[in-house]
Image (cartoon, rainbow, N blue to C red; front, side):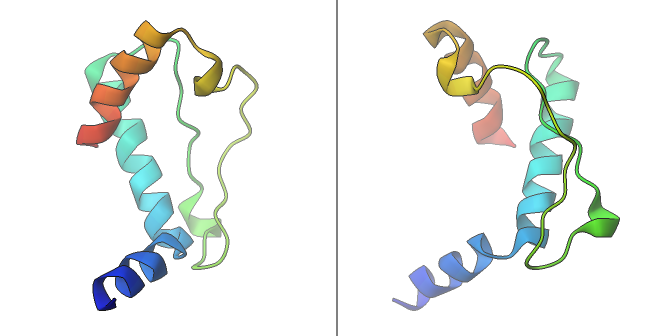
Length: 79
């Protein structure tokens, strides 16, 4: 139960989520993946309860073809 509580608390910490999002963004750029963009995080505006990132127009990953989802999932799991 303690491990679950720590994990749950961490998931609700949006500063932690901001770091994870930025790490994924950097990994995708480094891997040269084109056509899928992770929004930029504005860390100076983020708090434990607020996550601020750039607005993105586009297609949700869940609406992409399976081969594109497989490609991004491999990178995302390593980020």
